[in-house]
Length: 120
Image (cartoon, rainbow, N blue to C red; front, side, top):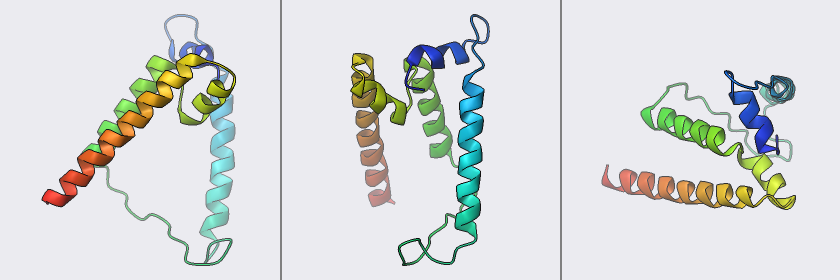
């Protein structure tokens, strides 16, 4: 996942398609499902205190737009946030550009939604 060419080859279904990323995603989903199952059986957090599980199920316009931007950035750069940090540690300078763009996007989003909430 920290090799951008591996990601780009997975997304290139008309060229040199590399399906091996499916196994990484499948493994991550299985681990995540196990974690969700364990948390759903608990009444409090592991270190005490209330356990807050999100209950919203609506699909909002900001969620869809953010998902599209995230997916486009992932497809263009070949990085997603966690592996980009790993790639930066391995010396990939493209990862630095990705991380800086991601942080700028987060700041803009935070500013937009903070201003939007104040005016509502």
